[in-house]
Length: 150
Ligand code: FES
Image 1 (cartoon, rainbow, N blue to C red):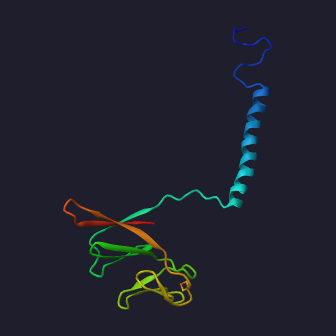
Image 2 (image 1 turned 60 degrees about the vertical axis):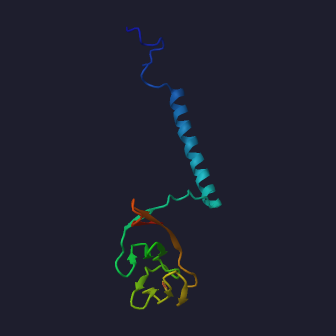
Image 3 (image 1 turned 180 degrees about the horizontal axis):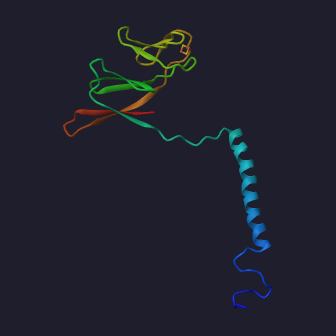
């Protein structure tokens, strides 16, 4: 007989019934809290704030002054730049900039927007959302990139 064995003969490495039930109880309480809290948060409309995504577009842009990204259109001239969403406010189709016509057009139902994102034709009823653009400059003050915050 070894000295580590308790007097009742149970193995000291295996948890006793009380510890096992306490462990299961904690898991059950955590599950119940999750099942209660999650629908409550959904009901109240709580959303975890989204971390902004930064997209860097190297300067200079093509001669047209327009960069077409997957999610935005960037218009830049000199030290001013603006970016508008490429998602149509009607039903969500991806917009294209018609360079020869000077406006943004939706290929689905032909809503049209100015390069500033103002709607002027078609079934879309809202203007395009705009995105903040920051200029990155080198030591001599030349713009090296445009950083679009999505
Ligand atoms: S989805 Fe763009 S006009 Fe309908």
